[in-house]
Image (cartoon, rainbow, N blue to C red; front, side, top):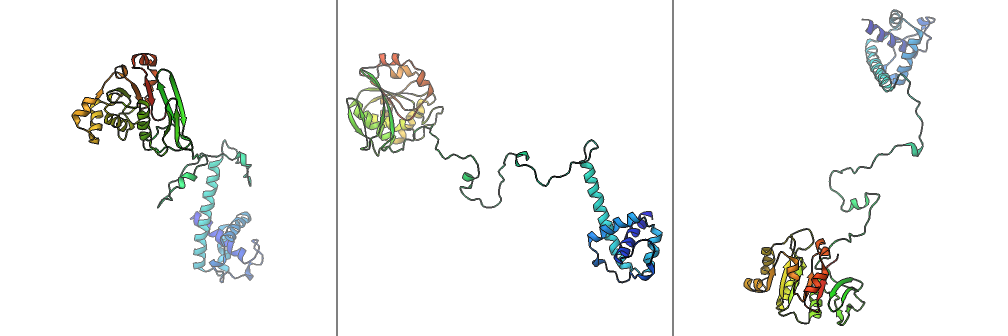
Length: 338
């Protein structure tokens, strides 16, 4: 009952304020509240009136007598009473939230209109996943630090087409040991001592290796050639589209005898790759190709060594020992990019 009287007291104070009469009991008989409408009172006005009534200290009994004397409508009183309850509940919730934010009993510091830019903490940016269709290529420009340079530390694709400015690395062992870093000229050729220009423009890496083999050895029929590396790249036994398959096929067409060593590729896979080309019979492939588990066995008494996969272990071999065990002049050709 006390709670209802308190709310009703606030309502009467509001109506008195609307009538523009001081809340002191003077001149009250000359005002009529019967024409007051609830829609005429805004929330801001209602809040101000509630605060004024509390300051005046008007008792619920006095407020009730004033309302009756001025003909207050019951419907208007009920509507304004509901709004007054909502405003009071909202104010109470805001006061509770402010109290919860206080720390160690100290009031909150006053809010600043703005803070220095360097004092505002920043959080790492997170990419938000957008719903619906995505714009192709948008991710290329979504990050602040974005590079467009291609990755260079990758094996050269076997179907890469050579052109002017490309560089080939050829390591030749013979009467003298030479490492050639050859740049394809504007005429499309590379030059090797004692061989003259070799035209490679427009050839793939595989075709260039085959042509250079032909120039280096003139004829490889009946010669032992060691092939180090059969996988298409190091640290794998995957041989799909490996350059070694096609280089070996070319040499076999010239009746060379091949000795193959790869750290991970088994003999069955080597023969399966050659048989798949259907260039010659399976029996002939096995007659001309030997797959061994010892690299020094593959290179012993060989006319040439072809390194076709960039295995790191190849760098650790005793190449002086290899050279001494090869036929002279001895050749070593490295294909691809290290």
